[in-house]
Image (cartoon, rainbow, N blue to C red; front, side, top):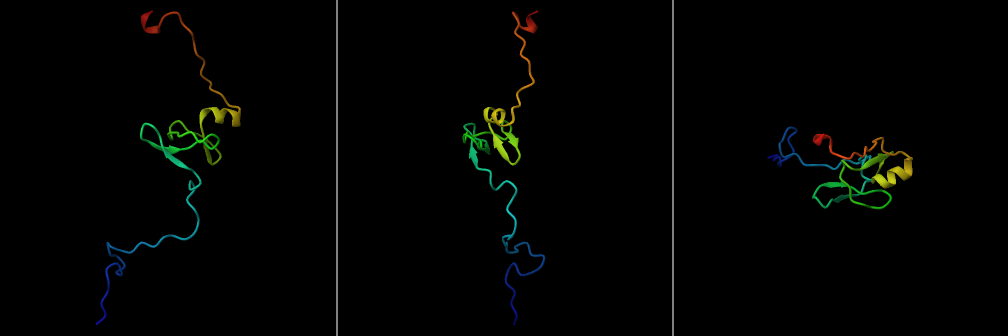
Length: 91
């Protein structure tokens, strides 16, 4: 009698998992860390600071904090701060 084990059927819900051999995932080189607020995110490539994905700046395939992003790219913020005597809602 030919007995089949679980996972041998072509459409079985319990198919065995076989690891894919081949290319690495595109972000395998990124070191991840948990930020102080509990989020998972990358570390700065230059200084190792823990970042959220929202605050991390991307250059090529690497993540940087704002300070090292500016050093690497020469870019800076386009925001111009306006100093006022009183707040706009109090005018």
